[in-house]
Length: 246
Image (cartoon, rainbow, N blue to C red; front, side, top):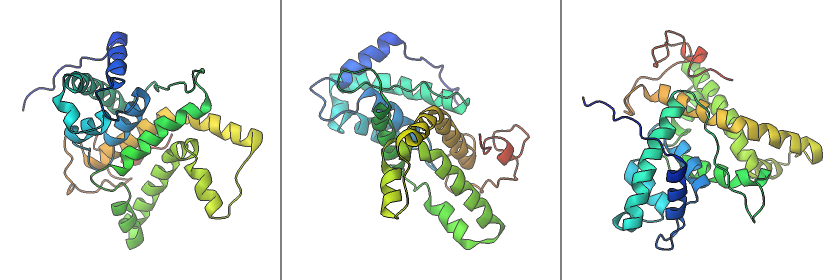
């Protein structure tokens, strides 16, 4: 097996160049840099990672973009950034969120929305549904069903910041006739979700990393129970390590 190539992390000049490339008019409908980060955090997670070619085409706006000089240069920077981002997530490091100010103003709470929308878009793009298998196990009942139910709760809790900051949580609550907080109470919840967001992203990535097993994304790997040894090799139970709640 070949050794993993050394990381070549992006510096400030690289980020500036990538931002300029993503704004190049030759690209049809590329993502902005904040959307790229949110999207990558999601597609690197999940039961199975989205293949590189698909995620690059989505970021750049089309498959054809990869055949252009701008697309090829952007793709190389994106490959480096993806490796850099994933290494941090695997190490349990909460990413510094790239947030863009809208309308020429300084970053504001609603500037989290594009980032979170891109993350949820990445969840939906997963080759294997994040919840289907867990929901089937939970419905089956028994000890494994209880574990699957706990895991669903774990994911729901960590996805909540994205759902709230995009407005999807409010929409769902109102559709079910539930009361929704207002004023200072809502502002306090929003600030809490903003603070929790980077840590939730790490938790979700490491949850799926443990579920997939180290160095493999095979779908037929044995299920990792919360009381099983953690696949990361720490010697701890999964629920006390990569599956632990904050």
